[in-house]
Image (cartoon, rainbow, N blue to C red; front, top):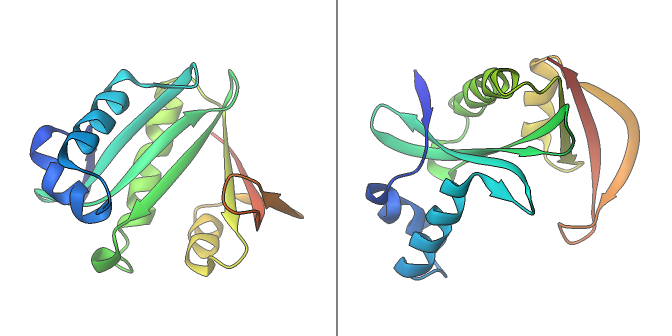
Amino acid sequence: MICLRHFIAEDIPALQKVYPDMTEQEVRDMLQQWHEMKYNGRYFEMFAVLSGSEVVGEISLYEHSKSAVSIGPTIYEPYRQNGYGKEAVKLAICRAREKGFRIIIQQVRTDNAASIALHNSLGFEIDGHGYIYKNRKEQPCYLFLMAI
C-alpha cells in the first residue's frame, strides 16, 4: 500500500541520494519551490511516493491548460517493478480530478517500455504519432491521453 504526501525536511537525505549533485541547501531550496505549488506561473504539485514510511519515489502534477494536466511519476531505482508507479499514478489521477482537471496528457519516451506498459494498463490512449520531446535531449516520445 502506498500513499502520497508533500516532501518534508526529513526527506532531504532520501532526495540527496536521488539528486547527488545537489547540496543540502539546493535540495532545501527545491523543496521550498515545490511547496509554492507553481511552476512558470502554472499549478504544479510534487508528492513523495511512500511505502510505509519510506520514500520510494516522487510524482508531480503540472497544469498545461485549464482542463489538462500531466502526471510525472518517478520510482527510485531500488523500488521499481513493485507496482508503486501504477498505484502512485492512480492516486495522482484522483488528485487531478479533485483539482478540476478533466484530461491527463503524458509524454512517454518511445524506449521506456515500463512506462508505456503502465499507461496502457491504466487505460490511457496513445495518439499513434511519434514526437520529439525537446526538453529531454530531443528524444522521441509518444503522447498518451486520458479523460478523467
